[in-house]
Image (cartoon, rainbow, N blue to C red; front, side, top):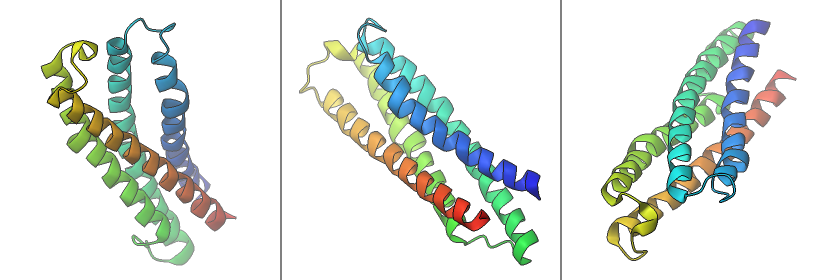
Length: 160
């Protein structure tokens, strides 16, 4: 049982920790002009890193949901797929999938159309759309982080 709980918590820590590292360390660092000379390079690093983070998040979400249901079955005799912690992780997974396939993929296509984004006028329709999608991407990632912290709280409270 302790190994199942370990996997459950580890998956959550990896996901939340990855989001925190990405938002508060990686993105601000690479967009610092003294680190990378162009915003284009910084954007390439961020896009690639976010893609990896999204796949890690989906994996962690599936592991968390599975181990959470195993833990519930052992403790309560039923898997409880609709327990609060599982509903939170399902929502986190759905938002991550939206970020991956509905937003990041469109942003990538726009970046390819524009070439060097810093050379595209700010009022160009593609750049306006890219910036709009970036705002939504940031909102979604922030929401997933807040939900993840709530999930951590719910999980910790349940295990105590």
